[in-house]
Length: 263
Image (cartoon, rainbow, N blue to C red; front, side, top):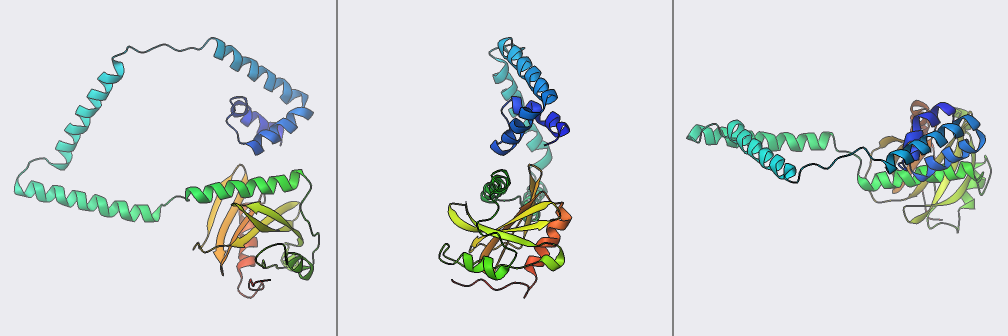
């Protein structure tokens, strides 16, 4: 982590708003940087001073009730004016048309702009945490090898499935090994690739879900998730998004890798 990155995160760190991974990175940087350590001490002292003398006041007891009553009146008035200008026969028809149109648009927009499911966000966080731990603990591979015919058989008997392993060295993404990991409450295969000085972890395990692909960015790491042939794949790296997508496209090329089979 650079000094500039730490300066952008120091307030959130002091307030305890960062996750474990980011907090560990900051603590490691503070241990070796006197300038940033001084900044941290100053911010911590300032926060302590504010907490001991909070700048706040108590609102009158009836303020909340008055605001709520006013809001209810505004909402009821707006509904009457917008949806039901008059309760003639054509007014009822217009109101029904508005309601049906809103419902239809809501369904369409919901399908078009559906956010990532909460479950996938949780798994993405686990994937990033496992990726960071593998770098911090210097434990990238249980079987360090660039030979796919060495890495793939190594998983036999250790997992209840056989992960597909591809050597992409000719495309600039050499295989450097594999290891066991634990994500989403089950043992998984982690294949490790490299692009220049960037490490890519590709996590694989069986799944029955249907997903054509999902890309997200969290904590500065890019994550791409998809399913194929009964397997779920999660690729994560600090590599730029364009090159990570290039890596994923190579993994997904039909015939470029072996089909998953039972060991």
